[in-house]
Image 1 (tube, rainbow, N blue to C red):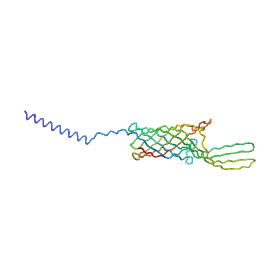
Image 2 (image 1 turned 60 degrees about the vertical axis):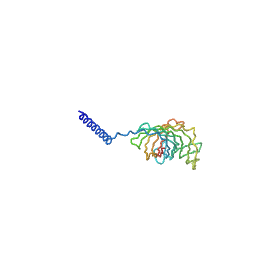
Image 3 (image 1 turned 90 degrees about the vertical axis):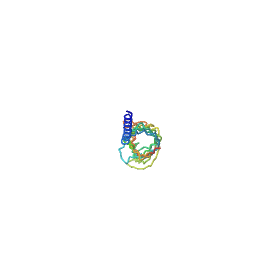
Image 4 (image 1 turned 60 degrees about the horizontal axis):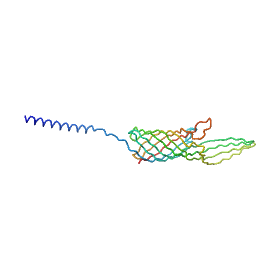
Length: 240
């Protein structure tokens, strides 16, 4: 009887040992998936170029005002796929080939003025982008951009034609003048759409289009369409 119990005990021990070995081999062949943790909050800087024009203009290379943007950002992960990225940027907008004309007649004298100038408008902008990552390094983004007008300038050429008694004289004038802040709507709301790619863990590239939703003029003339900014951005960012 003792030999029987001893034999059963040895058999049970061997079976238990064999089962443990098989379980360990199964875990080795089919390891449990490693859970990806949400990334930490990261701060960074960004800078790049702007290409902008006004909504009343047709999209053309001749109308594009080249400027720049630069500032800071913070990337706040919400989940493995989504993150929130607020930014604070110095943002240079505007347009080229902005044409205006006047035609005034006083008595026998007619004065026609035609101006072709470049407009530069400087803002402090706060984009608030929601980013979604289909892959680890590539993302698409969308969100509002809030801007505050700082200052601006018009510079270009004016042609003045004066006609008196059938005789016309023409003169060209180069001018540069500051934009009257009272004529500009200080606050501007835009909508941004973009995409980006993280080249490394720290360096990334980003492209964005911002469509302004607010008329930039403080007083919109009756019967006119809203005057908005249209801006393309391309830049680099560095996250610490």
